Length: 410
Ligand code: MG
Image (cartoon, rainbow, N blue to C red):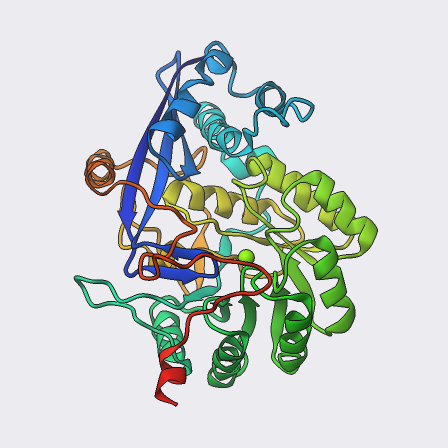
């Protein structure tokens, strides 16, 4: 089996409402690049990458000369061809490699009649639990959906998501409003769902000292972990030394050098593995194996996925022996998907690992056309800008936090 062609198509898929975070917002749609790798026996493997547009598509096409003639089963060769670390200073291709590796694993699985998780040693579980991922949301201009800011509004959203999807773990995406507002919302969530577990992630928006103050205040909660309250390995190490809650990161440890430093410094407890940021499904799984040997916890991170990337997260979750936490996904905030059969289903807070060969998902050609057209008509947006605060940008450590409605009323 040899690769003969590679294609990249940008799509925009609507969210139920714009999602706010500490650096800006997801403006009401996810922009993703769908990668298709075709072989000489007519198989097509699927990959997915964050962002899109002409430059992203051209970036994938530019790697065609590395790919044509390559046997998709030679996954380690693919990694060294594209991500040789001694050349990565000049060509940071980790995320493009991830999309191509997903497609190659999909191809190999289809060819051999095995699943992507089988290429990682096989499945240890067939359902992956997920956390409700609670964002402060802007109101959708047409549907009226969203607009949650206050503790009562956030608890109501969590109750609605729990009823729809069955989540038993709740994650608050903080860092938009002042830290005490996040604390108030987090404690209200913990009080509303006794027996469930919780995590808070302000996307590294707080100083070390603020992170210590809030961390101490949440100690009585049934916390899974305290995710990126501040930035950098040493900042996180200092927070960990002062707060009795396990810490977690998807920002300070996203490659193997940082993972080694994390272990040497005893800096962070739980590493959130992202199949894109780490450069692929196999790279994320390898990082999980390092964590297992050093007794670091792992979970599955979400960087804003459609069904193809969600499938990679499910296969990763299936194959990680040390997965002890519910995974994260933005997926339930999407209004639709580009895979056949529509959005994957949550049952009691879990999604089943796809049973078909490869990644186990198939593109819906009509949906692809519809959402490629939506991208062409609406275009992209900068992730680190807030459409409702055009003059604002994030500065650390002196943040200019938004003021919540509850504070205005007071
Ligand atoms: Mg995070």
